[in-house]
Length: 292
Ligand code: GUN
Image (cartoon, rainbow, N blue to C red; front, top):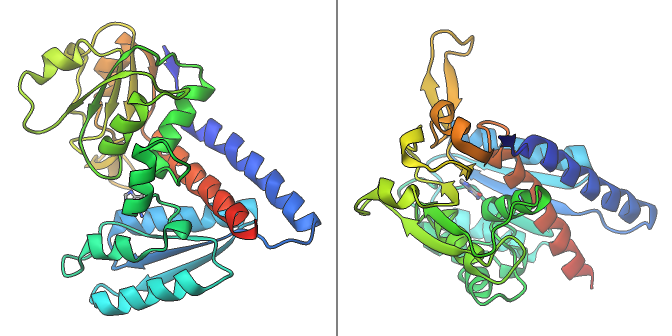
């Protein structure tokens, strides 16, 4: 069993990007600049956004965090987005999800200039992705493809089961893995909360991408020997034996699944760090497009 070490691979990618930044600096050119908007005080979102900003600092990007209170109106949020759209120094920006309930998420995502949409959530980028055209790939699916490629995991002709149909992970993942590409050419099945005989389907899978948001849902009896496991889930589970009072768990029951797996991502240290690395990669790409 091989651990797909997202922490290591993401550090490799960040080093590659840092080298590009050093070259940009030595050429006297504009350094990539990523901005993030955070609305409210959701603990997980604050952690993710801070990790994104810190990653920017480490590789030499400029970063801007726009931290707005929970009660921010949709109108004010849209004003901030327009400012970032027109600010020439900003190469790309993200609006951290989820947003408070009084804000229309779709309206907000559609307000982002697709050329600065480094999350790849704007319908223009989603459409371009589905049509195999150049676009910003959403960071989590992009990170999974990169991890599979760098570990030379064979995907061509394999049965891939994507668990979950979210706009951020499941849906784009299912589209990308069915496309003609390096980590692609797979036969993809999407399963979700209304799927019948779920375990019968997962047992036939060569590769499983678990992104349903239910901790330790996929257990050893639901997979076949040699399966490749990509675990996108990350949930805090109360644990009195830990100093901070919790442990992190994925959507996969690691203890029972890992002995049967040929490759498996750990939680934490698998998909999570890859997501951040690919967001940085998209920001570098956005800058290149803007200076061309
Ligand atoms: N919330 C969970 N994942 C993501 C992500 O990749 N981008 C943004 N903006 N919000 C998220």
